Image (cartoon, rainbow, N blue to C red):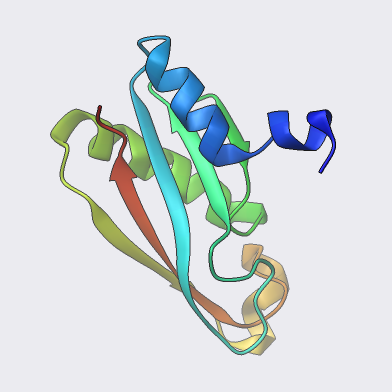
Amino acid sequence: MTNEAKMLDPLEIAEAWHRQGRAVALATVIETWGSAPRPVGSHLVIDGEGNFEGSVSGGCVEGAVIGEAADVIASGVPRVLEFGVADETAWRVGLSCGGRIRVFLERVDG
């Protein structure tokens, strides 16, 4: 792995942001069904200002996860989010693969 690729690793970014004193949430793909844009284990890190790195899906799913992150950061209560659409509506809502994913969203604490 190159230094550049290592610098972009969402888990390392989450750790660095947390050390900087930022409020941070981490989203992880924990399950997929059918065709999914990102595999299990993919991460998205979000700070309290809405900055983010990584990816759990793309499209409107990413925006929804980022929106939920503010609540998780504030409350400290993790949650599981599920996204999925029928194949015929997939393109319209941004999950073009037509599959389903489950994402675990948690606050990063020391």
